[in-house]
Image (cartoon, rainbow, N blue to C red; front, top):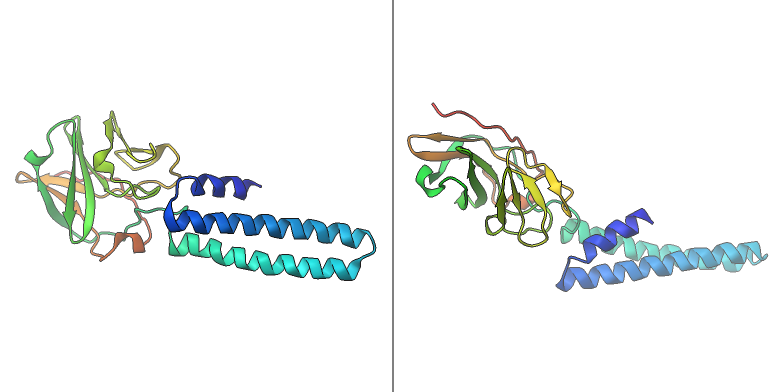
Amino acid sequence: MASAITGLTDWSETGGRSRRTGLVHGLLNVAATALFTASWFERGNDSASRGRLTAWAGYAIAAGSAYLGGDLVYGQRIGVTHAAIEEPEAFTAVAQSSDVPEGSMKRARKDDVDVLLARQHGRVCALAHTCAHLGGPLSEGTLKDGSVVCPWHGSEFALDDGRVLNGPATQAQPTFDVREQAGAIEVKVPRVDRVTQHRSRPSGRLVAGG
């Protein structure tokens, strides 16, 4: 029951192919549950052979539902972080310090990786730009005191370490080491082709410039 509730929550915020796949997945689960319940009653009414056949039908439908569930998670990335990154290797300049004035946010891009830069109280923070929930653009969201709110579904993440302050997101937003040197903002950006193909390893550390 708990997994059905969480799955329904994720499904309610999908669209297109993911929404159709999720609907079929849910209906198959309901059908399989109904068949297993019918099998239990049939076995209790001395219809063991019929109960076994009904149970096998339930297993077949459950297998089909499991396949669709796997496609939703691993193929369409529903219910998993959309901002996963690989451990970065070295600092690289992504913007000028003047590009991010106090109380503002900016989207920066380096080596096919989008980074959200935000400055508050004289400090620059760097997070993955794509929301961990369903991929919303954080730079188009709302900057609050110490946090950023995604414009799509309202997930709120702390700027310093990416932790979730308000859902529906359940995964922390990845953060990057960041420093300012010689008028430039430098971030440790992972050298990958697509950040969504790798595991998240948020750091949340601020490194002082030399």
